[in-house]
Image 1 (cartoon, rainbow, N blue to C red):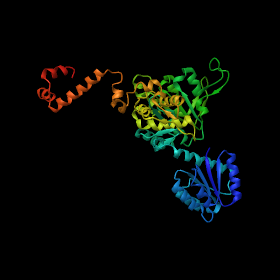
Image 2 (image 1 turned 135 degrees about the vertical axis):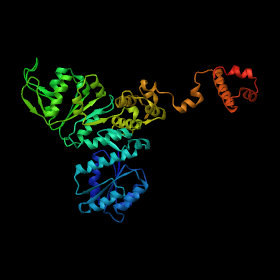
Image 3 (image 1 turned 90 degrees about the vertical axis):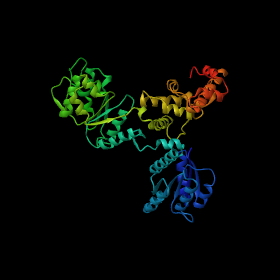
Image 4 (image 1 turned 180 degrees about the vertical axis):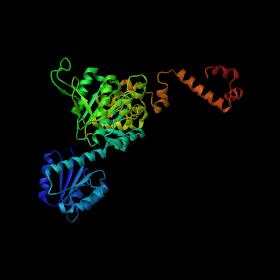
Length: 453
């Protein structure tokens, strides 16, 4: 339950706002004026302070500065009269999260309070989480800390406002559909529909009908006319996923649609104009399919007006922990404390090869959240496939208890003896006679101890 300090020098305002916020489930502490508020701030910390600006003898700006000094992480909302917005903006420069103008609407007030508390919760998360989430770019759940993903986001920024066809290539699970959705969301077609179809998931007759539609009687079971996805997505974006799996015969029809901007339903003779932006994706290099005769070269060049390459997760390790915390927040929900990730589990997450890319990472975090106890994710909470394929941490490997676990005392002493012999030989420049003298053993004994070295 969020704890809110409510400050005003008008008892009626305090009463109304206290009742309203308590009805929403908040713990409210009313303070009649700035002096009383300063007393309250000396006690138990607050998640949010809501204060009027015009008060006497201590006004809202003075109170804000004092609160910022002692409680820098506490969110602050300022209440101001309509004609004093400039003062409220000044308060935001000092550190207020936002301001509310009088007379205020109840819905607007509650939304602003909720936003301020969400902000406060985010700022209160541990330093590691905060630093990992401070990615420069974030489009539609795309987290980008690595140079490779920042480049992708730069491409999204540049191509989204255009109507250019985009080909997105990358391994399965790298987030190609998220890139497509981001392009749509930041385009002039964002109010239209985003329609996705997986070309690898449908047999040829069904894929053709799904894309272009059909007329009644076109084939067995076609009891009525049906719109295809090109028509359904009119004014929006059509995303053709795994386009490399599209049969050659349909590739030719798709090429015609891209050229003529019109479709012909299966079994029909009339053409229907379509206004759709096409985005395509492939998990294999289409150039290789062209060489094998499985993909049309002319269609490839029509699709790849703007190519975007999404690197596998193993090539953008800087994104791993930001993605981990992003998925944790998604699983846990807003406003709740995230589990801590211990150092060994963190090291494994950073060094695993992630053949399933971002999708596999997301599933691993879901697994960890399910099995974690006591607010901490450990190695034992990760899927066995992941934890078993990563070697011990450097710290663990360097400790005798971990390095020699299960070995006999004889094996331990033999290992240490070999290390010492090597050091002495190195000091002697490889001269075995000099090394034997330094060790005070015979040359024969030294040779007997070195057969494995």
